[in-house]
Image (cartoon, rainbow, N blue to C red; front, side, top):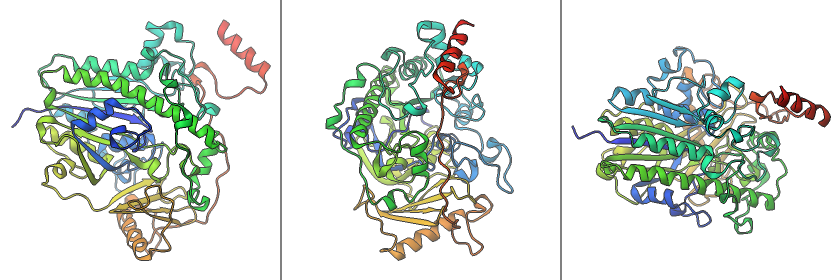
Amino acid sequence: MPQQPNVLFVMTDQQRGDTIAALGNPHVYTPNFDRLVARGAAFTQAYTPTPVCVAARYAVRTGRSALTTRVFSNGIEPAAAGQPEGMVERCGPHLGTRMRQLGYRTFGIGKFHSYPWNEDLGYDVHLHSEELFGTPERRATDDYAAFIAREHPDFDFVEGLHGERSEMYYMPQMSPLPAALTVESWAADRAAEQIHVDDDRPFFGFLSFIGPHPPLAPPIPFNRLYDPDRMPSPIRGDIDVDHADEQIPWMNHGVWAEDISDAQARVLRARYYGELTYIDDCLGRVLDAVEARPDADNTVICFFADHGDHLGDHRAWQKESFFEASCHVPLLLSWPTGGITPGDRRQELASLIDLYGIATGCAGEADLRDGADLLGVLRGTTAPREQLFGLFGAPGTARFKVMVREGRWKYIFIANGGRELLFDVAADPQELRQLAAGQPEVRARLRAAAAAYLAGPAGEGSLSESGDLRAFAFAARPLQRIYQFDRSRGIHGFPADPATGLQQYRAARDD
């Protein structure tokens, strides 16, 4: 058997699929992402199976559909009839565990968003940097927050180490920390240290950056690299199409983004690109560490994101829809000695659930689980998938929706109101022309494919008694704000009045 390669997974959070210069974006500067594009293959039709943080991460670490993980959003649903209760019992060993079983030294660094937060994911070295701290104990045990408190205590007063949230979620910001001390720099430095470790075993590393997930707060000088006047404005279609998914206006309100002008949207995109260029700069140190190894050419690097961000397109902010801005993700795969052609562009449909098979396949024992064999596709030994499915929201609820991608077509069914969207994403990549009424045969065929995918106990509640997709009478959810303050410092929301808030702050400070 050939020598097992090192395998490095690099993940960003909320990075759109159209944000890499070498893949056609003229507005962003990404020299190190471009290095990865030149080093191997780019899957330009890659999708998250569930466009939200927790669900996407469980898809990556298990190689399973949400029908098995039971993670259809940022929470976990009960097991379906006949399924084991535990995540590992339902899905099999997590990816880190499996790679360790295959003889790898394993390390995981960054955001993992698991339940519980310190779930054993199979890493010999596991360094967390999560976004929020619910208790003082959680902040004290977060490896990045502990690093700041221990080695840079002058910055430990900062409540939002990654930027301010709540009403500031989509307000342009600057990092409260210098570039060398932010979580992205810390994560890159820790990953480089692990890559340099001298060990007889190959390594499997998982580096998970928090950015460019909002708040959009790049450090100096990345906060001022992009002129908002040079940024494109958001793309909008018919509002009945843009907001056919009721999740979009609901979430807009939740993060104080219900009334963002085009001018402010261009400022926010400039900060978003600043975050990306900063992460790209940090990534460069990681790639340099790989290239410094004598076995650099026998190192697999796989880069991807969990989902995208609307950034105002379709009158939407955040993610959780099946518009391209939200569900289309970058996916780059390189292995110089593994036969992957440098600079290759691939049009085959790819999903984050395929990553489990990539890592285990490179290790010599491919376990595809619910995914497709992308290594086989690259080598010409496996036919690509014909259809790709996406899910969001628990089956049997009005929040449920399903996407089917096939060839040039994208079909979306939204249970709330039984609404359907159909786009020709080849001819209309901005998804401005709704074709459900004009292409009845395509609509019916893809709707039937979605129903067949959901048939069985795991999809219970998503289908009617006749086996068709189940619709609910449309109902708008009551609007509510999402408050994300530093609960580890005892802050749960805005004070009843400014005087009370100031008194509470002074009391906590003087305690």
